[in-house]
Length: 238
Length: 254
Image (cartoon, rainbow over all chains, first blue to last red; front, side, top):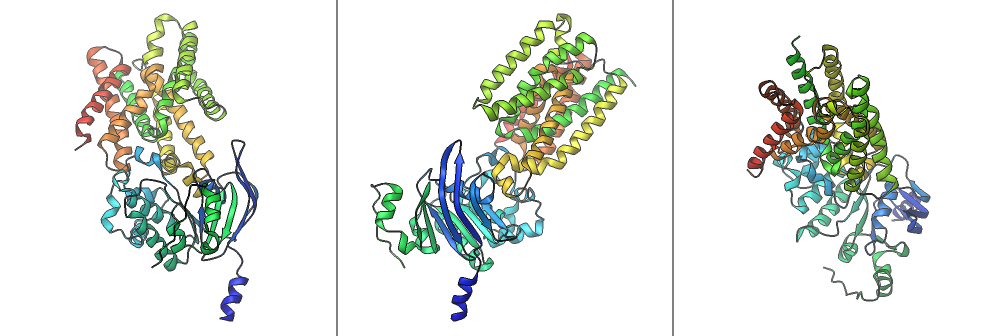
């Protein structure tokens, strides 16, 4: 027990963010944000539309300019699941070819598709004909190529087939256990936060609150985050 | 070598390379870009006809200018592609007609490869082969960039470098394309085979192969029709290409 606690505190954070500022077209999108992520954490970024959640993920990936510090552990590998890919349907492409864009060999594609619950015949499916849930799983599988240590997951706001969402988080849980993933996810779904994550950042340009879901997700904080009209309902845990 | 064979060979090489490139340009309105670029080459073609040098050489600096303009417009202003097309189109055509010898207007507008020489044909074949191999090399990366620049960047792909190779390929193909179909029709040379191939393909392999094949076939049949009918080859190539497109609509949903 003692060793476990010691280890937990000895572990260097996998990600340190200090005084992060991101400006998009001269408008402050993220202001003075600081947090740390440790190995195995599932960190949820919660907030209303336009709060800078996706921007934060992109800054963490290094694809947006920022001020402040973003320090990833050395040689950490990051997989990115984007919110949506509207242009992908412009090009006829099957699932196998989508993975080949990344230079993945057929054997590995099969293995990785298996791990997100797809059979072999899925390789020849046309990307444009997948359901939104299937496409989401495919994107997760795509991000898992190269065995990343960290997964950045940007939840689509709309368009996942009904009942699809539950299984996506079930899948993420399973993958986290199997692969020892650290996960940073953007979501709107409070039930996901309670079931799945151990740390929450409430973001609305700056950090409104952060901590464990139980500590942080109280009515006052949520009202501040989403505005007065939001009523927090008691969550049923099974 | 017989004049007709030279025209046919040159047409086939340019048509094939343009069709292949077109399959990369369908997404994100890039196919539209070939339109203003083609129109902008008109002053260059006019100069070439006036002073008697190769039209592709005349067109090339104007294509480069066009690419820089498009880049500047898109990045510096929020001007839409449609407004851009309108502005570049009109100014290109207007400037060309200031000094284009009217007797040679047809060559500038709809192209002419009926008098192409052996050396020209050789240069065209080598250039097209080079561009084909270049496109093949960057194909997957550009496809990923077309799908999402963010996703490509998250894969540590040097987006700027690949875009530069891509734009360079577009510039060369447009400059060569004006020789075959003129400044007005280059967009069609690039876009129509690709759109047709998209209607008929289930995957990327069929799509890219289909675009290339339809580009070759349209050029071949168009130039053959030119031999038979005596109408200019450029418009005939585009009309053949359009007929393939119409036929593809029938098969689209099957």
